[in-house]
Image: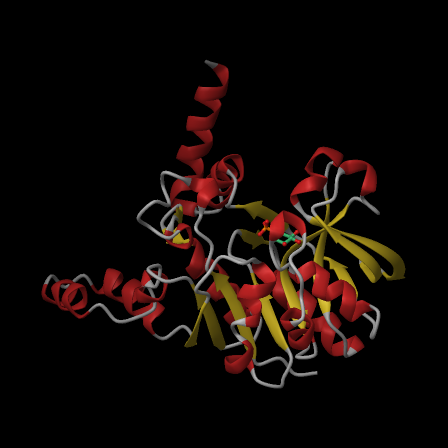
Length: 288
Ligand code: G1P
């Protein structure tokens, strides 16, 4: 299969990051100096997908402004001969081709993905949840696309989580299918710990086929009263093979306060101009 489009779900109200997300969509909050949404768009483009369908909620459309030209800022930087900054600003204007879809009511992740149906059309597509960001030698989405192309089947990203974390995620039941690869035999959204079929959790990257859309459209409210993508995937797994890929790399949860801090430190330590001073600062703080 050839995947040309990615659906980026940026329609949440960001309640887990209040008050920071009261006015600013949480996807715009930066990791060091780069908005989360830019990090995931860069991952998508680096994975070979240049067309993005952004699912937005009403009043939160500023997420997309980040990828539009900013004429006043650009001419100011030009006048001041700040070509270094101009390059940083202009880079975001041409990163990808964007389409939008709107989720008018917060009815769940499955419902948000369904809103992209028309823009996606009848072809396979990726789904990106910008709360989850990754760092590694190869983009997480690229790792999934490699499996999807090889198996000609939908694939989700998987990571082992601590038992106490299980109720936060979609948890899968699996059969072995190769190194870091599993065939999905069942899944449940946000189970209680004793009901979890494994410790393998779905992380926010998926490669899906368009036959998921009718299942989402028929979807009944599941965990938390929301239309869940996991439930539609479960229904799909009864009709065709679905895979889970334990990706290589580090994942940060930006929707969580501690995860947000970890991402600042993890990405900060990767910046050559910051790393030494940040490391020294962390040592001082930890020894005081
Ligand atoms: C969503 C999915 C869940 C998945 C998680 C990954 O949940 O519904 O299956 O494990 O993303 O971050 P949310 O975090 O939106 O509650």
